[in-house]
Length: 111
Length: 115
Image 1 (cartoon, chains in turn blue, brown):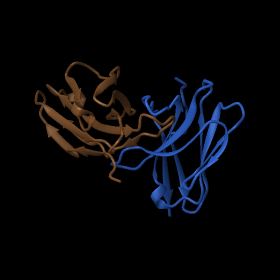
Image 2: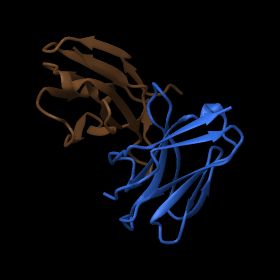
Image 3: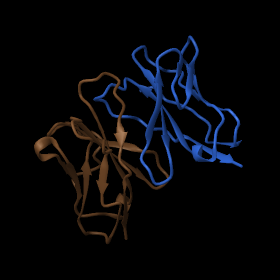
Image 4: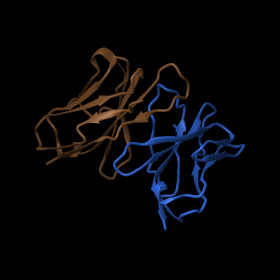
């Protein structure tokens, strides 16, 4: 399984765009990149998933360069409610395979 | 649509006692997973059910842990006897079986404290 490296923590003011980069140098051809969000006292929640280039949904954008050795989760105009831990996962995350979590990035949004 | 539910939300027991955690997956989800995070560590996979069958139990720490999913609906995870190092948050997740790259939906977790 590809190992991921991401910042331990980040702070941001409300209204700013936040970019969290994840390194995954050993990503395999069949691997997808998936981001989960976890609020305090809750289970992780799927945010976005991608294989290459750019993916955007109502919550975030995911940028993946051509070599796929890293990826960047972009949260536009964060609010206080975006304070959470964000996990970058890399693997063949089909519906029947376990997820492998790292330490995640703790994002704190301040007013 | 109801999400994944877990019971209880918190449990405090003494070392040597038995505790049973319950998970109700999203209706229609054949895949059910158990994960846990012990204090200061990452979330770790425990086991995976497809319907009532154990697909992968490679993450189960030892034979004090017993998971069941009779009838392929809800699942229970029993810890007997509980040890101090079993303290942590136990998460359950579910997903559909027939959709590639289907995401997993997590419950809120059960916080277990063994004294």
